[in-house]
Length: 375
Image 1: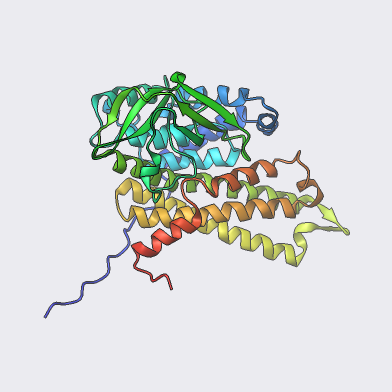
Image 2 (image 1 turned 135 degrees about the vertical axis):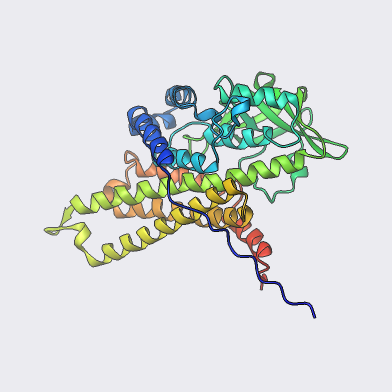
């Protein structure tokens, strides 16, 4: 008689940060603390984009982060998603306006597909060196479960709300051919890129129109669908770490404020109701840290990566938004003013809430993965 199979056990992954990861965090944090001033982030909403133009060359060139996920034989650092997650935590903590997620993670993952062409290898080397920046030409709301036939671009097609397009030198364009999608590298200068006013100007979006799609094939037909889906899944997993950084800033800043602000002759943090709010906030952020860290470690190890990604993407997305909303409310009157930095974090949290797949979409996919009935 056939014996029932035991359910697969979760991978036993080490979630502790290594000394190398701690050193990387220190370097990124020091650079952002020096250059990413909150007042300059606020200036983004007045149309001053100088901060992003200064930050990315520093991160990509001085620290070599553009090639973090690129193998050493292609000119990169040969790191894993664990290290990339640490970088994104700090980017979220400062709401830094840099295309690390869109270029060094999503676009790079497309170009590192196992079936990628020699043109892809040459391009990924330029990305790793910080000489160019790339963006995958799909709406930022597209997740790994989106029908990728909708991603196909042809001459005259306009693709709306693309993240990273304004900074990109190269657009990775999915094109429908026999056998599925192929990905072509198209010079951004040949496209019409129109900035749009979006909620989060620290990650600007643009509508992109291509009169024609001419460029080198970097991922051939038959592999394009897989490459795009893998890139979006990796992006969703690591976006969770950025959302963790947003939530951690909200918690730390709110706690510091409530320990200093006095009202009715008492420190606000001493009121029992506020203690409970902070305790709930702390528990949620710690849980988000565990789920984001597990997703990054699972991707690096190739173990349970999709389940881990779905959990992190859905949970961290909502935790970051809740933490940002709580930060504004618990700061009271000063939190309601546009001058306070909490609004930058609320905007980043809200815009990323629907990026690379909504929490609901990830939970629905997770239910299928773990064979959980819908009703």
